[in-house]
Length: 118
Ligand SMILES: [Zn+2]
Ligand SMILES: [Zn+2]
Ligand SMILES: [Zn+2]
Ligand SMILES: [Zn+2]
Image 1 (cartoon, rainbow, N blue to C red):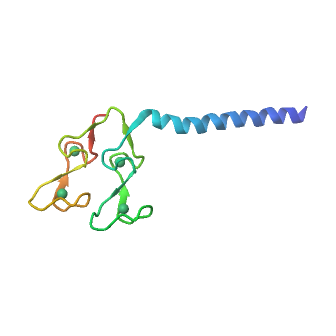
Image 2 (image 1 turned 135 degrees about the vertical axis):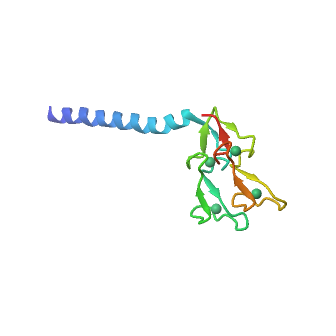
Image 3 (image 1 turned 120 degrees about the horizontal axis):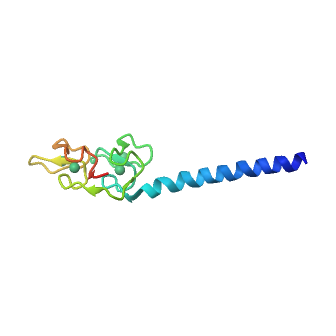
């Protein structure tokens, strides 16, 4: 009898753990279903275009503030018209160098996120 009781308890924990794990993976993707405009879904933002990105552990990469590092933004989010989804607006004669560009200023329309809406 003791064994059966233990078995049921174990099964219960197994089911609860399964539900928790499934929920953990399914719920965020249900709320966020499109790729972040700013980082193209990578979750990180490379800030210096002169130095090639070395990938994981790159010291010029920062967590993308458009998506909070998840790479996903809500489906209802719309690309910011002012910055075209970059989160920054270029001004000046020099060619824009991208993420860490000195001629760029933070986009006020989207608060540097690259998208508007909720
Ligand atoms: Zn990088
Ligand atoms: Zn992002
Ligand atoms: Zn620029
Ligand atoms: Zn913007």
